Length: 248
Image (cartoon, rainbow, N blue to C red; front, side, top):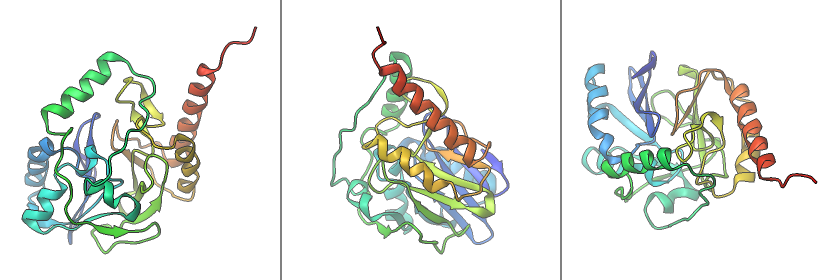
């Protein structure tokens, strides 16, 4: 799915990853879940490109629904997989976590889990070798992605800013479709290790000027970084207020 020239999405509002395309090749931001491999092939074919055009993968973090087909690309095509050093063990399958789920509605949760399970998303192949990166790095990949530290969802969560396509890829630093409740619009993501730190990390986006804010779950947002951040904070405040006991 083309969002704008040079910017494409693989997947859907349940699980998504992205392609940055220029004359030098392709950067893949996140790798979805394994069963989205045919969608990757179809998007490349529509572009007149192939798997050999992918120069590198940048993971926004190391969770199972973001590493998807990364190891397959690394092993079979030699594509390097970049991930923040703090999430390297998670991407390699060496670290297991159990973050809180928060609010749950049966139908949206079942839809997400069924979709992921049918496509191998609950047991993806760990990435055997990763290239550790740090916030502030500008990678020598198509689009010259710049990395922004966004700890909270995981210790090594990053945003990936690519000015040439007017976009910042935020992984699970925020969501525009809550996979456990079905709520739509910018909001905190579920399965977050440290929700307070994740909210504080939104300040790190404040210096970024980009129209497109692209999460791992939910519809692409093209209303700008500032408005997305404002709505996430408002949603967090509303959720906190709803949990407070009523005054008597």
